[in-house]
Amino acid sequence: MQVSIDISLYPLNEKFIPPIDDFISNLKKYDNIGLRTNSMSTQLFGEFDDLMIILKIEIEIHFEKEINSVLN
Image (cartoon, rainbow, N blue to C red; front, side, top):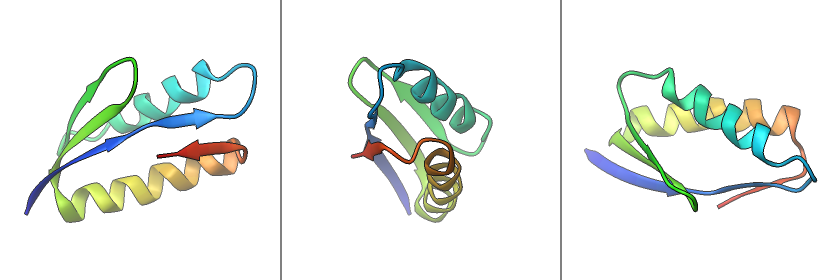
């Protein structure tokens, strides 16, 4: 099933841009999903199962580095 997911990441520290850029860069390495970014969020497009697996991996990696973050 094809889906789209809109996510926003808010690292809760003064230097919040690098963790966001890192998260998006990690998502760009997957060639089986579509990715669009804007100033407020990132949209992901692809197969539901693929997106869920990718998000689980990348969210875990992010929270291991930046425990004080909000992902919406």
